[in-house]
Length: 312
Ligand code: GLN
Image (cartoon, rainbow, N blue to C red; front, side, top):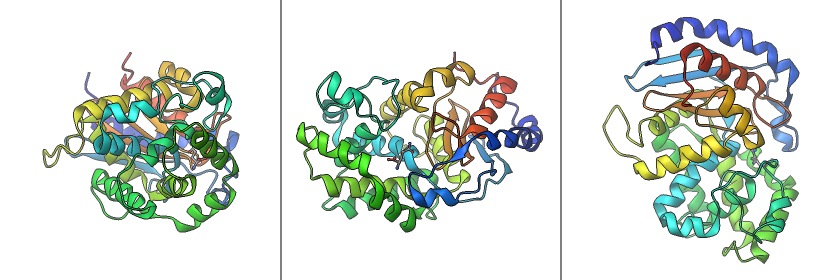
């Protein structure tokens, strides 16, 4: 049954206030020092329906950085730049069941080739596949693509978050050097990481993320103009990865409890969508032990239950 958007708009403020309580159980990410300043108890959501209707509630206006949500966007851009074969020569299609920055399976299973593009190792390889003359040019192209998908030129790089991650990314650096050693990464390590840290530091609000979700929900077409922004085949690939790997090593549980494509980031953002219907952007900086927004996941669970969103 299609979602009754008017009903949803009415119920939304109450649902957000109910779920905000869960934020006290989570913790804001601190391993990127600049993220530690985020408001722990914030929770906001924007939904954009393909009819043009928008619903918002809570702290949906607060800016946050995309972090891992950017991995979906760079995957789409790399597929558009290089094609499917070139991308999947370098990165696999399987979930890992490990934490997002794990090194474990890189060495254990198929030397050097990351399991999927939504874990850090895979996303770093994908960043290296973005077309561009320099690292800065590649990062600018990612930003341009985010703005196109968001339908708005206001997303931009948060330089403090970028510098904070760049200065402390010992784990990501070691992953990248390992990939380089295994010749999975053809480009140099530092310029590749520059692109990766920059894409993670793109600052948005829930409205932007909801609009990106709407484009994915609508098979890559902007419903307001009819323009195909991303080929349908690549959107299908991205949505499949979101279902199988988008919520890190909680993706299986999320599929059971919520049942829609979603991708989270350590700043507390979630990009989600109800296929054929609407896009969702959420911010809730307090994370659960798997690194997903604790209040945000509860909110999606309640919405999915009440509006029968599960695809399964
Ligand atoms: N920039 C972050 C990192 O590489 C992104 C990770 C995330 O959002 N899970 O650690």
